[in-house]
Length: 456
Image (tube, rainbow, N blue to C red; front, top):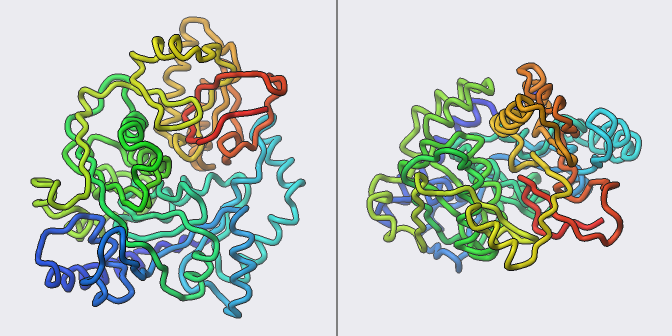
């Protein structure tokens, strides 16, 4: 299939952003955050910008892309059919990742899904072909990882019919989860209406070290802000600490901004994003972004005095950050791992672990798979195998094929792990659990992002 995020599209977007920013600066006469640059750059009418008040005013924006998954996407396409248009007016893709149940293993579960959901897949594929929509078949990967690898670009604006669409913020894109009708209207050529968001700044200094991972940053943020602390706000990360985090690590953080109710989250463009673009065969887009760095980062004055430009600022010293564990049942019930044992004891949590899960759209990158395989290699060197089910979900076929090529999959299989399909699976409850009796209390350890209790 043709990759629709072309260098020509990116150049056109950057030209529009530069024009709008120039006009907006004359209206407000002050430095701008990255969030403002991207939002203002996509306004349908730049003259309306002078009246925008965060948290109160409504803005009309022109997104660059739309992403649909196979459950919500069905209704979007049915609604789009009523428009009478022959093609979507902007690049759109459909990703078949939500209907595949995790039961046996990747290859078996994909075959079952193709049989069970044959009618849905045929409808999505044929209608995508008819309306010029990119179609990613079952097994191709989880929507957010596929978008990150193929379509996301710094400074862009995308809407998607899935709550964790903000994953693309790890590549400097404002990516926002929406309802189906919002997507339909944009595909039909209408501007998208959004309550103009407030701005929350997360100042990162220092560097991650030891066992600390990008996931620990967002768990710390969720603990500070709670599950509603980011409502009607865009979370913008800035500071020297951002440069030490990989692009896929940044995506893990922006992905879980959904758990604090944020409109989306975003990182400034940097060398790690350039490396990722080039590693995913988008050298031309990296070259274009390098020539427009000034519109892909906040103005220098913002970092020097962030309290003037954000509604709230949180500072995190990455060098002092511990690994964090969140839950049960809610992502803002977080504590450093050093406090976990006492917390389990005081609250009488069940400390017998029944299953361990690695992957989902939150932690399914090559980097995440390599981390897990490294621990597995250490276990194997001591003659150890897993004592409970260890389920691993690669984020895309590209990642699955790469970890098979590079040996990480073999290492995981050797200690008894099961590699599931490149799909959402357990993260959205598409999971068969034969090891648990109905109603039996249990504890799992997971890198996923669920907001609900696991039940049989």
